[in-house]
Length: 255
Image 1 (cartoon, one colour):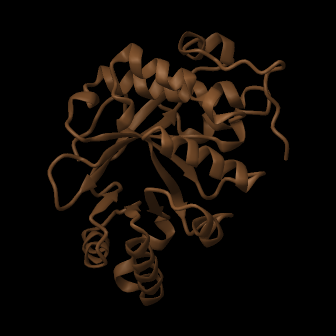
Image 2 (cartoon, one colour; image 1 turned 135 degrees about the horizontal axis):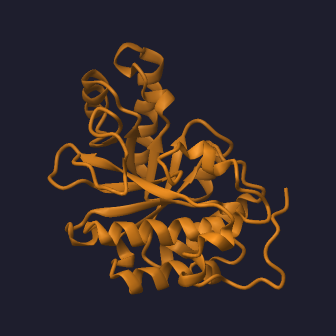
């Protein structure tokens, strides 16, 4: 599937990305912590897109198409940084801001990152504390293009992450070509893992692979103390889910 960009392609600036009228619809962000069970402050807060009245992500993403995908991706980054900075996330020592991005919306990584860096400077958020997640479930039309994006982000000092690992299109083949800083285990692998030997074996194997490759693992969708403890037994100290906090609209819930 090809992706269309504004012709001629012109990277959007921070002010352009804050213009909801240009996008054609409004949205906001909710924040959910990724907790460090062995440390103090949250490892990160993930910015999750929501409708202006708190509607779920699906209602917003349903309005994204080939014509507005690039601008939406850019607008999400700027909105997340603006809100996170206003909520004081930048002042929490070492805690990261995790932003989901659409690889099919990115034309040239070095150009498309411009509005992100402008937003960091404008709102006083340290760019080195950004973590960029791509969901493994999104069908990427060009795997090499995704690797180029990740490689560029790594060179810039950003943290790279694959979300929903174990659920989508890329999986181990992508991991063999590029090793991100972070893998987020899909919640279907986490659900009732304490009572499911097959899921335990799979997660144990991923944990061993991640350790050998120097990759940080995050368990997402954790809802019970048994799931939490089972993951911790496998060395997964970073976790995210309703057990710790639900996403909060334009707020940082305690993790």
